[in-house]
Length: 130
Image (tube, rainbow, N blue to C red; front, side):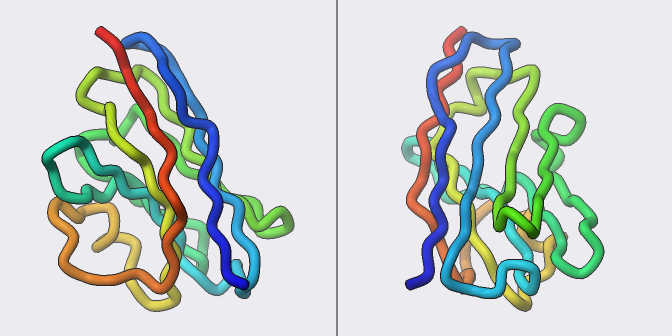
């Protein structure tokens, strides 16, 4: 059974940090690009970051570049998103998703989701208070 399990969300004050994790199972993890999306209330899914399976290159949306860091460990089938200098506008449900073909640059640049990913995880809520 394919699973992507996101965890680590929570409530943090503006300027604080959180790290969310995405644990994968049931598929060949190191052959898939893994991205993080987020969805704020009343808004569409937005790409946040993505890490390429081919060379480990990380891609970020402009809104999080310099504040968020995506990393992965193929031995642990896990991707992390370290979020620093959090802002209230970062408040959203964060989802991880994996795809064998979708280029990471596209994932990170997504402002409105109009395509599918092979696998999705259930989201984890991140709330940043002002």
